[in-house]
Image 1 (tube, rainbow, N blue to C red):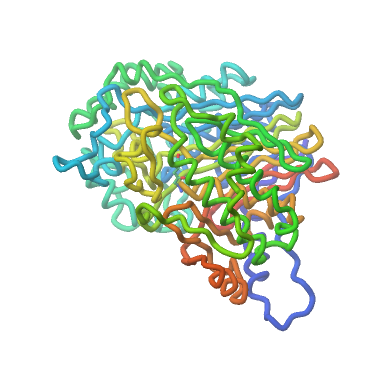
Image 2 (image 1 turned 135 degrees about the vertical axis):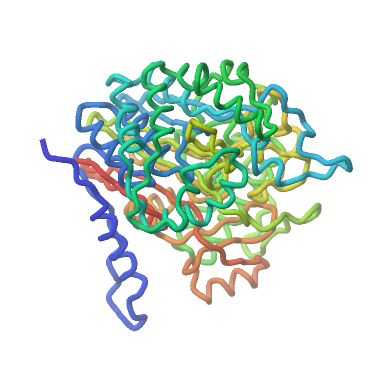
Length: 573
Ligand code: DON
């Protein structure tokens, strides 16, 4: 069998192609070739870090299935991509087996049992943003380890020990920092040292340089406990003691019982169709699947506008207006269904969506305003991570996992070597008050003990003609949904290949604030002007999303889309 092709080389090659593509002189008449991703015959992993993709590809090559590879990648990312990879956070997994059966797994964090609705309000009833974002009180009860065991128990094939070992080796022996990571560590270390109660690996060096080897012996030990004792190696015993001791030192509220009680939950996938495609995605407590299907159904009501072409005035206006309405629905109707009756069927009912778009004006921007202005998106650096996997049998897994902000709540659990999440900020701390992504919410997403905070994560699998077609997802907070939406449209409407669709510049509207955020290069100046003339306000911002996706090509081979915005890489064979 051929060795898997490690695609760091490929990643830099596609980055070069991408750079050339955008730096060609304007006078050139011949259209430049769009970037192409790694193409493999049988199996592929695309993730945020080349070493994690390699771990997954090695598992697939040894005969492991897509779920085995996902478990290996999740643990590996917890080591080599600590900004978002995690054992101290949570996430969602969408699985489509080769025979078409689909499952979704919810390993989202939960509010601790001592959490209460107004826990982030001051005496005057104002929300204190830092409290839900930084430090011990911002952490939800982690779900990732329970999630990996639940997935493996039901669908894994290789022994769990073999899937965790690569992460242990990376933590114990060390791994080299990429240039982007060195910068990220330097940027984050002061905060991590401030909020952690004991010295951490991040603060162990004055100035991190690209190529520096990072060793994480405490994390290696924690992972060994998980390897040897199963999920109890995290939720009970030594690791649980360390988490609770950390909480006590930092005035957090997660207890032994909270950890012991945590369970990942298999849930019904959210499914629906768009043209010839069937979408399989994540339902509550993520808003992602419902919002994605709503968006596709709304734009599907005006196909001629979409057909005007990629990032044309008509198609962009249509997409913005759909996004405005969908995010408004999200704010009031979506939350954890174990606590709040989310009207899933009603939100996806074609008659409802027809009515929802009845006031759409093809010529004018509508007005989100009436109540409050939102706040600019994510001033703080935010991070989540997504990976997509297809195995040689055609099973597919789509996982988005997060500790919410970059390096979570900035607290490394003393002696255990991993960061905790600040996922509590995804709850609505107070009706109408924006969270760190500018998202607002109300009753449906109010804090309650044991409740899961609403997510935008949208791990998705797309079928065409009953066959696997695409595996897709991204980080990006509130922009996750719109990034997945645009990536799918780029392929199915505009004929992009996977890498091209992932690399294409993106835009985002979320109802409030009433602004279209866009990446540099997303629109030419005439298009931008025409959209502004229709009443849309635009604001350029940094990267939107980091999509990692896989497309099944017409001949059955796989094309990876590894987002050039990061160190993301595809590996496979
Ligand atoms: O679950 C959510 O929607 C957020 N916690 C995701 C955070 C995120 O994507 C930040 N990354 N860029």
